[in-house]
Image (tube, rainbow, N blue to C red; front, top):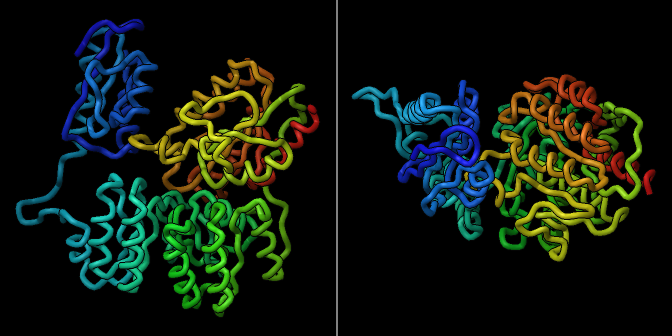
Length: 499
């Protein structure tokens, strides 16, 4: 449909069935079309409730009832010609995605198993599954049946399917990384949201994507390095899954001659599973140290520092840009807006004993749940990377839209606060996160007295460059730290000075 919208200009809003594209591709289409002359707003996304709500906020709500498996195309432009050109550009971008270069005698493989068969006896071949969660288990099972390890990037996989996949992988002598495995490094090959880190003697087993990135980047900054980073999925150390992939990964690293030490990284695990992992770890020839977050051990940086001590190495001064010396306003509260779930948990574990209750969409205690409204007065930490917020959308490490809107709302609210953020660099992440974040922070600080503290996770060798990003953020008035724990403590110090 094309008609005058509530804002200036004309609009087109449509729903298409039988069309699917991954959220990263759709975000790219939205950005490219939005940059065209005469286009004032665009959203091309799967019609999930969150994306429909975003369209409503833009004045581009569909008239029909939307289903999550439909494609929503919403465009506003200054006139009919610009609108028609923009919609044509969307169609062309989607059509380009569907084109295949296959010839009549060389058709592309239609299943994971067929694709692996085409590789012959390449024992190093690893399957990566990144499809909607309801289809992921079938594709992963196909890879296991072909005798290959598989990284399941997809989230939304039922836990009973995860358990079945990991049991099948154990029987086949291969590994399942995931579901919801966002980061891995296998024999020097970075997968998902991994960073460019030097090779070294430390193997990492991680039920946490950003946790794995934090520890591997700190190891790199200390001049050490990793042999492998094996992601096992955020639920692996839950009671329901029982650490199946963690135990298999520990056995694999124990047998790897390049691995001299192992670090196990996770959000707070189920106590019984943590005990079993500790028991098995104690029986391995390779020393294993835990970096599992808990109220007793809330700090990934401290775990890395302890590992360096185990290795007889000095702890370096972690990179930082302390920023301007500014106190928070009287009565200020902590507002943590995170893209990494483990980093958000770490911030809450550190802040809770100092500040008291911290509310969150991923709370440490159920009674602190924010619910669907991601804003509230008082101390809070929001994980924008939570599965509920990434259905049909790119991860916030790629698409910062929701967090940028939250920063704007915070500045407009008038509530005195210290803003704590993470920015995660590496493969797959935003090519220049400071480019979008600096204008938002500058505008927010001009509107309200808002000290900003950033945990910048990455390395100098990352495509974005740690120092380049740190310098840009510091120039916007942020205090920047390579350690999320150090960033959180700095924010707490600012709050303490104001109390």
